[in-house]
Image (cartoon, rainbow, N blue to C red; front, side, top):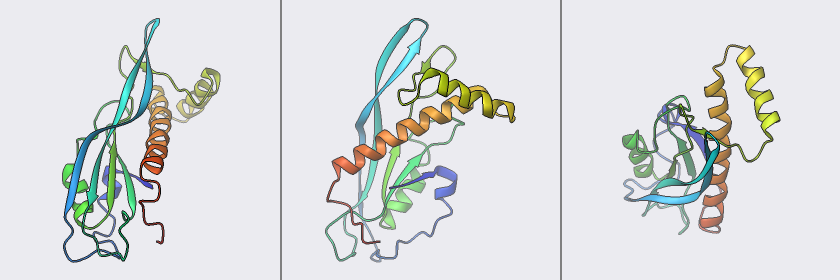
Amino acid sequence: FHVLPRHIAALLPLRAAHASDECSYTITKDIKYGDGVIQEGNNTTTIPLYLDAYLPTNCKNGSDKLPIPIGQIHGGGFLHGSRSSGVENKIRFAEACYAVFAIDYRLVEKNKKPVIESLSEDAAQAFVTEFTEEGGRPEQTYGALVALEDTIKAKEFVQKQFAGKIDTRW
């Protein structure tokens, strides 16, 4: 499971080494991969986290398993954007016999702050402070931590959901 930002993914070789001349694909949208917590003032809310799967269906890789999985995170500086952006790139990769999982992650918004569950508040704040001192924007740095946490959740979901169904010979 390789995680690629949308603009980097466009630079990869277009055809997987094991791809047939033409790959068809299916798109499954709104697959819930987990939950995330958002804080609004004194209230916390749990929201569902979703991904879309672009899965090749007829790759000639000598296996009935899914080929090279790619996790695609959207652009937007961790403050806006969604998994539905850049559909043309996801389709290009699925046609080239890559399995693409496009994820949404919790965004940092004006009155809504995602809760980082994998770090203490002090550890998250220390990370944000250090990167802000080096010229980063605090909300983007915090958003990057949230996106990383949600990406790990998505990766673990895909690994569990598709256990034994992904070709790991590459």
